[in-house]
Amino acid sequence: MERALLVGLVFVLLFGVGMSIPFDEKDLESEESLWDLYERWRSHHTVTRDIAEKHRKFNVFKANVRYIHEFNKNDAPYKLRLNKFGDLTKEEFRKTYAGSRIHHHMMFRGERRGTSNFTHAKTNDLPVSIDWRQKGAVTGVKDQGHCGINQIKTNKLLSLSEQELIDCDKGENQGCNGGLMDLAFDFIKKIGGLTSEVNYPYEAEEGTCDTLKENSPLVVIDGHVNVPENDEDALLKAVANQPVSVAIEASGTDFQFYSEGVFTGDCGTDLDHGVAIVGYGITQDGTKYWTVKNSWGPEWGEKGYIRMQRGISRKGGLCGIAMEASYPIKTSSNPTEKKTKTHKDEL
Image (cartoon, one colour):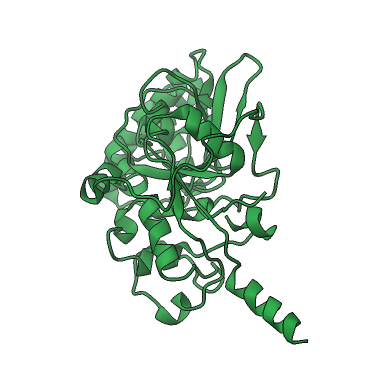
């Protein structure tokens, strides 16, 4: 099966977190116990605040802790936990971790443009579930910090450079201020491929393009395909064949503190974060879900992933997941493979 896999890289263009600390009713009994919990949380996550900010943040922390505690009393299909985002307001969280302003970029881009028509339209007999992680086609979860595909084709899983995209794609995309996945795919094709993360490591901030590193591509792609908008059936066909880049609204409080289970929470379609769907499945009680890879570190959610309900009647799917989906296509060999082939031919 020949399909492309640059998806796990590109979603971080649109843009962590440490282990959570447990708490119980006793921690919520008084201002003193809550302050002790806040100090333990700050120490655990090495969060520093000046005196004035510390007291303001404590009030935010109290509200978040109480929200998490009350929510987890409900019989919801997912749970929340206190993580590194514990003293961030919803607005602060969105600005830092889900501030890609994808709708803004969509308006300036205009009509979606793809290299070819939807290639999986005639796919039938889909498996009940699939997990591309189990097939070795997904790199490890990364942590985007404050900055906002190749394996299926070649059987080689390579970790590629997000920093090259941030520093060098200065056209319609805007580095740490976000962008669109399809435009990133266009850029990768235009420059002749992307280098490795080892060669051009991630800095979590926008810098000047290193042209020497940019001219050392490791993986090439031949374009990208847009999944039909607002069509979860088409999205399912695409994910059955390879991971897919999608945009979602991820700035809600439940998303901020998501821990485990199938996310069914309230969210709209104000797309503000890029992620990758790496599989799908169904729970024992019959709830259908997408397996989504995030970029907030492996300690957030289910080891860096979230399961999001699929197949709902709402236009665009849950959190707009079916509104802006795309995936790269690959038929060409990578530069290193071409060199190897030429060398063998010469021998």
